[in-house]
Image (cartoon, rainbow, N blue to C red; front, top):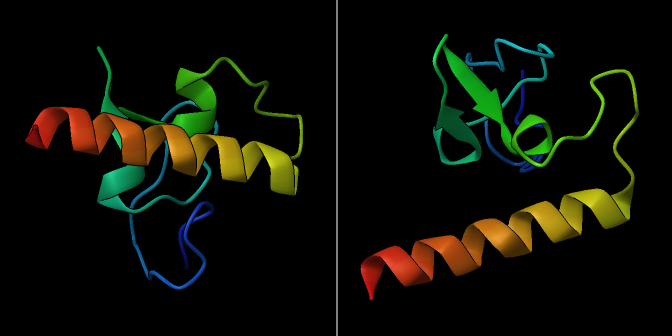
Length: 70
């Protein structure tokens, strides 16, 4: 399997809410398991991700990483 958000990354992990495959960088801790970036943003699990959704999610993830590393 490959990450839904990074097709070049192999992963065996997935979102406990929607089941999308995701790499560790694209998962966030949740009260039960881990949720993918799409679920964190509130996108419906049944709603397919568009290219625009993926770009926004990855861009937001990069901004958050930069903010954490200072």
